[in-house]
Length: 409
Length: 229
Ligand SMILES: Nc1ncnc2c1ncn2[C@@H]1O[C@H](COP(=O)(O)OP(=O)(O)OP(=O)(O)O)[C@@H](O)[C@H]1O
Ligand SMILES: [Mg+2]
Image (cartoon, rainbow over all chains, first blue to last red):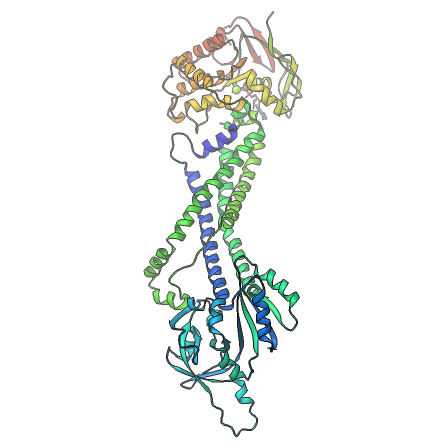
């Protein structure tokens, strides 16, 4: 070990003393910054993962869609099924309809699905909160959570559906009869966008409502593991005839995914200020320490140390504080994440906001997830900032003339 | 014919406009002991700094082991210095974050690195200055005299050719000053180091082979110490 590294470590952790006050405060500052960054980034990642899962779970990996109805749906379906990357396909059609129950109207997006195949493409089963899928094919409907709440519909209730097709009947003689369906199940993904306003019907019922003669609007696709949806969609589009278009789940939700990513990045930079503050306080304290140790620096000069090495000694102190701070901050963050639910529930109890939390955040479990990359980025930033904090005192130390320093009492 | 280790030739030093000394010729031979005295502010410390090239002379030349180092780069000087000079200052000699043994080994660390033989040497010398058993003591728990004894040992650690002691006993009472002085002279003799002693104390100056007095910017040789100054 170089002598200046040795001295730097000794100045931070003097022999025979447990820990110096300066070191403790500095390390704590860095550790807190690292911990907060790590926890927040992990929780945001957790939310992102949940949202992505909800998206893929409700939309599938990919869909082949068209502006106008696809008439040769079965041919396209057969073609898609023949591709080696494709694990499963499910035809669908969709549109807007009016739904009514007890004079409460709603205008949900209705999606006609072929349940058996649909279950192979999306994780519908996972999101079913009540009811079963058994009665779906015999004239059932599945409502999204928020739609069901708005309609005040429970499993077993019936709802009436009016399609635009019914209103097209020019001669008003005919009485338009709504289609009555029974609520078979209610699904909830926890992701507002997907839960808002959707009703799932059997495909044939939907086709009848919209007068589609067996036409469909698109085909949902589940890919085999390790096939990248974006790349596959790009390749697939070369084989498909417009207006039929393949779109990966990432493209379909580009805005949302971009917003999520931006949010995470912004949070990172905002929280980086905590580390910046810690680095500033280190820079200040180290500068004071340079002044206090002026005579010692002169002494080291007499013992054969160069100005550059003395400067390095203070840089290394910054570096060591960064490393030790990160080494404490990351495990601390992991511990917080490990016990996050206990911490949240304790906080909630303390503040008596249990109902509020459940109502508005609708989660009892806070998601969190972290990977090596996040840890690396956070630690790299923490250490870099601490090193930069060491530069100022180092420059000051390098300027000290040993002869003058030795006069310093 | 003795070997000259370090030499000042016609050296002058001024800080901005104020001249501290000029025309100084001084050489230190292997194993000899030299005392320098003079009034406070006469420039003794400055002279010592110039000799060790911690401060550069304003004129003249500094010669180490026959080489003129006056214009040498400071990184080169830093390499040469610890082999030639061991320093003992009046006080604040030791690094407070290190214990006694670590302080002793620190000069070795700067020069080459610490080996077992250095540890043995340090312990041995500690015994010589009646400080055995103090290896792991904290510097702040030592008395002034004890600190100076540790500093004496530390100055010896690199086996320097010259020990430069700037009023090493200046802040000690008479008895411990005598003890520390005896240790310095004793160890220098034992390990063959020359000694450049800067002191106000006439008794100590007398013990040296030769003594000089810095006065009015000039160095006068006093072979025999006289009490009146
Ligand atoms: N960097 C400097 N700038 C200006 N003047 C200085 C500087 N360093 C020292 N001096 C002056 O040089 C003179 C000699 O100082 P020096 O420390 O060498 O004296 P000294 O003989 O060692 O005194 P003492 O016995 O009190 O230790 C003093 O007058 C001091 O004020
Ligand atoms: Mg002096």
